[in-house]
Image (tube, rainbow, N blue to C red):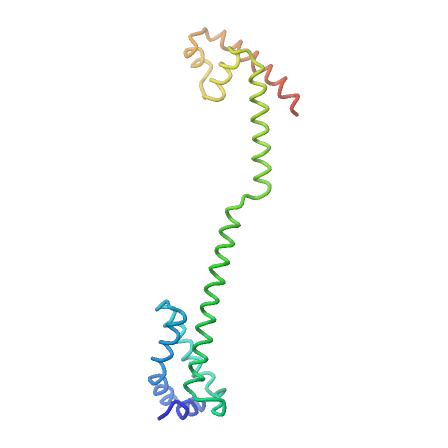
Length: 180
């Protein structure tokens, strides 16, 4: 039987006719879809969707507008193009989301700028300390040493380091208080 006759029988719900039509058109449908979609697994899926659609919509076939095979291949081509467009759109959405994820939020940018300004202000205030105060404060607060370790590194008595730290931190507090 020809595809036109089989499609009319399928429209009436004839399962045997559908099996025969399936055997007749599945190769050309898959070949067409494969050329458009390119991915073998996606192509198989689209071809199955097309063949399932034939079963459901066989009654829509109008033999006055062309042959059954051309109608079937038109349906297959449309489905394949839809799949390619859908995949491209999904890929573009993913790329947009990835770009959006890499752009820091406004709050993050403003916080980084503010932190940079604060660091600069602290540096200026540290520069106002005596060399001995700056050295003690830097070792303790930036390098993480305890007062005792600062005293050992500088080969000074612990009491002297504590005095430098107290005086230096007081001057820093006064200086930074003007930044607020």
